Image 1: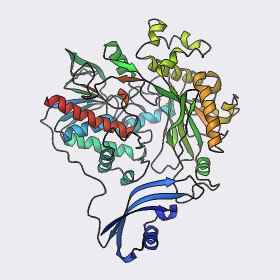
Image 2 (image 1 turned 180 degrees about the horizontal axis):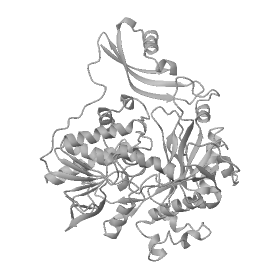
Image 3 (image 1 turned 180 degrees about the vertical axis):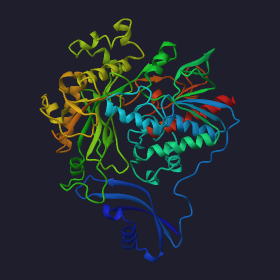
Image 4 (image 1 turned 90 degrees about the horizontal axis):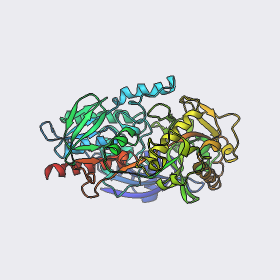
Length: 540
């Protein structure tokens, strides 16, 4: 017999199967000798009160053993002789698109500008060691996309976009822990995700697909408003419908689309900083205990959001027990992001702290003491008015802010930083706390040189968050600039029904880079949807 129970237990009970069985005996009247197995289906932590509880959905097997696997398998057949679809980008959108194409009987040809996930890791190390960024192999470009080495969090609020459980099960099939099917905020970890990505690639190749690394798409081949394929910088041409899943940092792709009259539009982004606290402090605050998380609880998470002067100010991509990493994708840029290993065991916890920015806000942004509109790097070759009304104006703003940050960081990957309380007091930090950011920090008055549209809202947001959570606003925390790659600065416009570009047939803008996703899971879901749309296009 199988029984399911909703339980609310102490952390030490949730962490130990024998203790859990004893709890079921005491609270549910079960016979311990009859319980042959338990399986946790869902798990979440309730830290709202001083006593911390873990909410569990538990399946209990009485006098029988589990017969079903812990995850659902997807069958992938050989597609070697099937029609091909070109997938540009091997991030989550592209990988899940390719796997779904195989399910549907089509042959995916993946073209990825960066290196495979293992070789890519060597280039990431050079950013800290040599202060140099390879523009084709970095935290944004390469197999696995921006998520491969920036945390691997699998939480999404986009429940209506598609089959989220399918995405998680495919990850498990390729080596991820089945805990991601259980936890409220599932997480693979930067140390485990690369192997999972390799296994996904191996499945694609074993089924007859192709994966071409260090092969950058330079142009779409368009004839009579229909995509026929792509041209690459290697000189090789690939023919077929195109799923364009290039990620939110492929700025050359956006520029090519705009220059070739492929309809795109500027979209809202969020910009700000990485805020890093000692992990022990966040544990104490969130778990209401001066001793921190103790033996049975994970590194604590937090989430803050508020409206400040008409725009959202919020935490983003919170990484408990993690690291701040250099995420620039080209020269003369400083961009920061966060990541966590699977055990979330570092001495720091960080999150993006960002301010909502809409395209119309740039037109009113004369608050740089006039410097923004006079800055040649921010202006287009034509008039400033043309720049302001351009499809790329949010991209230009990202580039402006990243270059400004690079200048403040001594023109290296050392990042400008300021203690949190000093920032709210508009005071330069005399020194900086120890940080996980490997290239190093330099004290800088972020309150002074960051656009006041951002700095003033962050200041007010921090003070509000400090009231909600006592101890959060502290000089033990450090702000590291800048966080700009929260989402794509443009949207490649597509038809809502067919998912094709609004004008160009056979072109399927996909995932986060196209403006239709916001993380690993939602990008994977969108990749599957684009694969299904490509199947419908080929069939009809």
